[in-house]
Structures are given as structure tokens and as C-alpha cells.
Length: 341
Image (cartoon, rainbow, N blue to C red):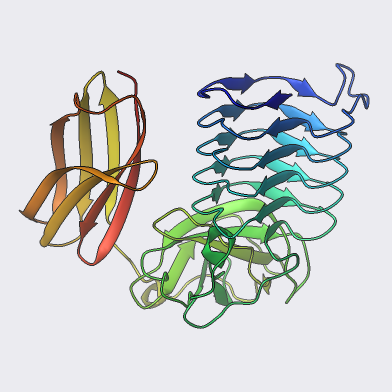
């Protein structure tokens, strides 16, 4: 499959790509799926993508943006399982199995390839790293997380201790506050970087970068790893594995954090925003187009802690992809809008 220079918003659904109906190798000479200039907002869902002579999925060049890659099995490809290269932004890789590929599980390259979210995937037994943010190879954290690069070279979390029913640690850098931490069973040994086989759970870091994730499927001797995703959607590499050495949790260890949340439901020209505030706060809700320009500000004022709904007439917006950002309590929450007028 190769896609370029069309409007997008299509679907690649339920295909065998590179593999025959009996599971035999009929791999393509290039990548299984290849997106290039001028295609955005496609969905790649529930495909088996194997044995291709290049990448399982390759997205490259300008405006290959906003794709959703979800619940695919991507295995036994000669190069990377998923390769986001050049200027690829706002993509999501969700609940995929990505294993036994010849290079990396997921590789993101290009200094402006940002806001690419990787969540709840099973990534294991690829030849090198499970998630690799360019340059090639494991990228060390920097204290302030001020380095530039794909996904802003988001710092990975550090695990301080792993119990059978929770894992806790720290996240450093300017983006540490209210990042989402996902914890996985790791496929490698202690103090090694690489893969996450089984998603165990998620939590939110507080404004000091401290986080705790409750788990139910770990046993003594297992290895766990984690990723961090900031409020803009930039996901890190996997952190160094930590062995589970302690049984049960001390209640005081759990660090509850009430996150700021935002969702949006679009019906024709109307958008209903639902948001939750962890505390009484000044509130600003702004809507931006795909280029990052402010197009509307549906809300500015103060609000009490708790759940809120706001109905907004979006009839003035042209068809396209927009991003709503809620600023409150020194935090930011984001929701994606797809308008079809």
C-alpha cells in the first residue's frame, strides 16, 4: 500500500499485508504501508503486517500527520515495525503488537516530528530498541529536558522501586508535571533498556515529577519498564528495567494526583467540551488549527473544582483537524476535533 497527495481521512482496515491467508511469507519488496506527502488523518486498524522487505509501516515527509495506528499486529518485517520519518506529527500508535522486526519496534526521526503518542502497545523482541527517538540508539535523559528532536526527545521516567502491586518513581525535565506514565512487563533483564511486553497500568506524575502506578499482574522476579507522555502527546523511549523485589504496597507510598482532563464530542456544527478541574482555578479554553494558529477562544474565566460541560457553536470553522487546549491550575489538557462541514 502506498498513499500520497490526497486529502486523507481514509481507512486501512482488516488486511493481510505481506502475509498470505495461510500465514506464508508473501512480503512486499518495500514497506507494507507507505504514506508520504499530503496525506493526513487516516486510520490503520486491525491489520496483520508481516514479512515486508522494508518497514511494516512507513510514514515520511511533510504533512503525513494525524494518523491513528491501532490494534495492528506488526511482526517479522526486515527493518522497523513502524517508522515515522521526516516531518510526521500528531500520530497515535495504540494497542498494537510490534515484535520480531529486524531493526526497531518504533523509530521516530526528524527534529519536528512531534506529538506522536504511543500507548498500551506490546513491543518486544525487536532487534534493537522497542521505541527509539533519533538519533539511533538509546537517548539519555537531560536534566531540564531542553534538548530538541523527535517527540521533543521526551525524557523517560526513572523507576525507584517495584512492588507486586505498584511501581513508583520520578520524571525529570520541564515537561514532568502531569505527564502520563505507562508501566509494562519488560522483556529484558535488570538495568537494560528496550521493550515492554504487557501493559500493566498508567498514572500521572505530580508537579514534582513523582508518580505511582498500581499494578495487579506482577510477581516477584518480574522486570518492569515504563514510558512517559507529556500533555502535548510526546511519548518517550522505554526506561531502564527494574526487577520486582517487594511484596504488597505501603499505603502512604501511593501518590494520588487529580489530573486536568478535557474531551470533545463533535455533532455537526456543535462541539460539547467536557472537562474536570482538580481545584478552583482560572480557566482558558482555546482552539487551534493544524498549523498551530489560534482560531477561537470558547471560554475564559474562573471555575470551581469538579466536572463541567460547555456547548460551543463551531459553525464558523472550515472542515479540518483542530486542537482544543484547556489551560487551568498551571496545567494543560488537549483534545482533538475533526470538523466536517
